[in-house]
Image (cartoon, one colour):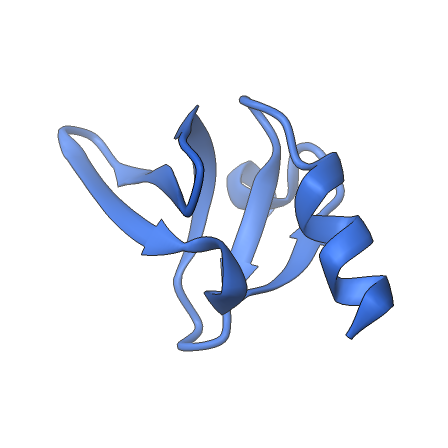
Length: 64
């Protein structure tokens, strides 16, 4: 749990993340409990910080 909390607090706007549900996107906004992530053109969702499972290396989304 501690490692997950450290990972989540280190996320910045522009980072590419994957959610526990399998959504992959780029962080566009950060609030206290939520991230706004861009999934595609004109598609943004808000996701709880606890639902982030991993931070991806930059450029991963473009390579998929």
